[in-house]
Amino acid sequence: MYSELIETFLSYFGGQSDGIRIFRSPGRVNLIGEHTDYNGGFVFPVALTMDTTVLARPRDDRQINLIATDLKQMVSANLDELHKWKHLKWGNYQLGVADELQKSGYKLCGCDLLYDDKVPLGSGLSSSAAIEIATAIALVALGNAYHEIKREINMVEIAKIAQKAEHNYVGVKCGIMDQFASAMGKKNMAIFLDCRDLTWEMVPLDMKGYKLVIANTNVKRSLAGEKYNERRSECEHGLEQLRRIFPNASYLRDISVGDFIRYRDQISGETIRKRVAHVVYENERVIKAVEALKKNRLKEFGVLMNASHDSLRDLYEVTGKELDTLVEQSRKVEGVLGSRMTGAGFGGCTVSLVREDKVREFIERVGGAYYKEIGHDASFYITEAGNGGREIIF
Ligand code: GLA
Image (tube, rainbow, N blue to C red; front, side):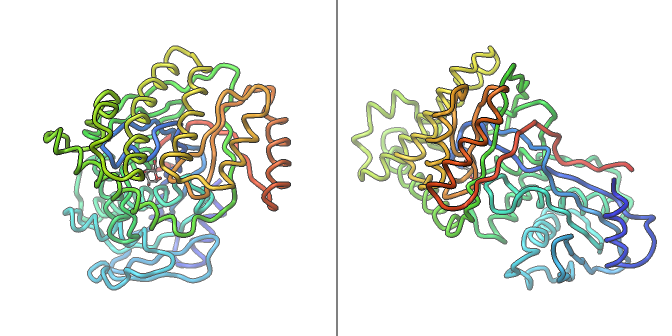
């Protein structure tokens, strides 16, 4: 299975295949709990089986060389001068991770890395987190072996370091959800994560007779980073105002629905009030959704998914025509219990809960209607929950 990739690796870097190690880390789809993570709230993501594979081999110098199966141009950097490469078109995530690992005290070694990315790029399925986590575990594993350090890799710490790389190298002030899901995912499980203290619970993703179907708008999320950071600061603004009444609140998560209803008039500005409303109610929806899934009340789960999308459309305003079209069309298909956007929004993907025997009809009808309305195709993937970042022993 890996022999082709090994051949490609050797064609770029030469030498022998001994010493090559293989690491994989997945993208994610979030079932519910959107734009809650950086507000210290709850999320409920699932790691995908689509992932990034990295082939890695140590070098005896401090050089780090990056190439990908779908790229022709190699990126080379020196581990001691990583700041010089902050503005790369491709390679930022990897070098950012290397830099943040070193800043956190990890001892790395030079290496050659080949990437094979199977998470559709820029689709809101966390292709970036997949690259970051795969890179991080590869660099740490190689560094540990090179420097003869015997220490288990702490995956939660790895997720936090990858998040820092995204903040400092990519400029998106993302929350922890994507990196956490990519690092910690488990086959057949959804992750109920409390982003305030990073405690989590694995919940079996046992949807009898139903499938999760992802639909990709195939719209690249331009400006997404900018808009994302803007939403984040709007939330901070809302929290600042609410702190006059709740001085101990550290995040919007600390504001309950009851508190919000009572004191909503204290928040000045309709926009900020809408953003806060989304976050407060969305947190409550995640808790209800987790309960519903545990009790196999899928209808209720679907209703909560729908409410989440509507709130992201009307209150948080991060959907747009393509996502709304997909959701609207999805809900028209019989056997669909719920449909919503997933990830940051502004393009990207939706996730729908579809009765198994209706999946084919779903793809045909939603795909057809989307093409008619938007003028280009959507793509569809049937989701299973896969494992998080790991080394492949081959
Ligand atoms: C992006 C970010 C996450 C999260 C989602 C929205 O995927 O990387 O941290 O904020 O958007 O829920």
